[in-house]
Length: 480
Image (cartoon, rainbow, N blue to C red; front, top):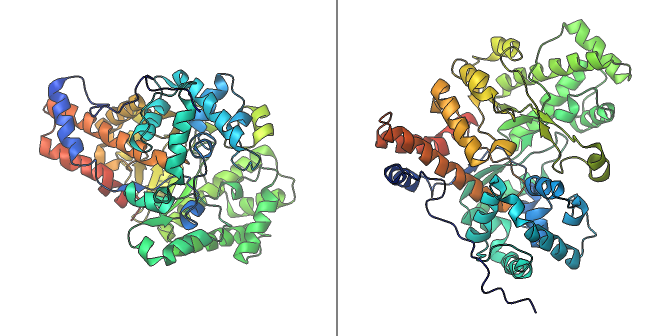
């Protein structure tokens, strides 16, 4: 029996959350938001496993659904003394018992106040109340009752991924996939006429591991790529052919974009002989760090060239120092929440790429980064000139409400709304998707309402613009 928690403080969602405290502006925000809140979700960049939809898998339990895969939650808890192993990290673990999962949930609830003021607190509240029907504020006293409420929700077959695609109004969602993936899950979904008539799940080509010759496992990965593509990769021309082959395979399976998590934005072609020579040194394990970087920049430039030919939208997102904490990486592997932003340079770094391809009619290039400062100083002015360049909406560390409002104010004054990609939620947490998109729509309404109140836009223009940001922009940028 769980402790009686009837008197626990309530957890609520205010209907005017994120809107202005000024009454007149708030009324405008409400009217704008009313026109977008029920529009379908388009999610062109994320990391939800396609098998969740393909196999219509149960989410298991609250810990596996909400805690284990969520980097944002993990990092805050780790900073406040919780070991990641207590949260079921990494996601590939199979040894967590019901007692372990419940203990992890209790730990999370005991640390609820550590999320005060964070974007995570906002999303979590939206999910707990809006999706799961939780009414108690998380605490050590309410943890078990909340766990049981969410577990009952998970155990209902109406709350498996395919049904939730309907309930969340997800029209399009992109996964992130290795170039060697056979895309079986995407084939299965596309073949389901009832499902595919309402929803589209698209693979995204993520070739980073094949474009970084400095990595110790690069040679092995290139060999595997060659085998999958049926191409001899002993030469640079062979690697190029293998990458083109797999891009075509992804496109044939519904892919609309490629994704590149890179260290910097430098991209430059080498002389053909130099490129082949460095590729040979890399294959022989004799390449220097500087040579590996030059070859990497050459390979990135060639991905842009390929995008102009096959039409796949290309997304670049530099500025993350991956696996910053060595001990965490050694214990748990990559992608567990210890990636840290750093400053980048954009204008000089992208000049050669944009001079060659920046106005190409078949290229859509989306640039987003963790370095908030460069949006107004460099990215927005570049997107305000080059026809192929679009501004990716903030993600990850800067997708907090305050950061997004700064983003909106800083980029639209230089580039306007038409150069913005639309919402990029970048999430692995399926049930956070509606919360993230609703947050963006509320902030769109709040930002546009301020422009209306300042007599910089008419309200009908603001409403039309809000709809474009939700639907038209992402469909245009990702060629849907």
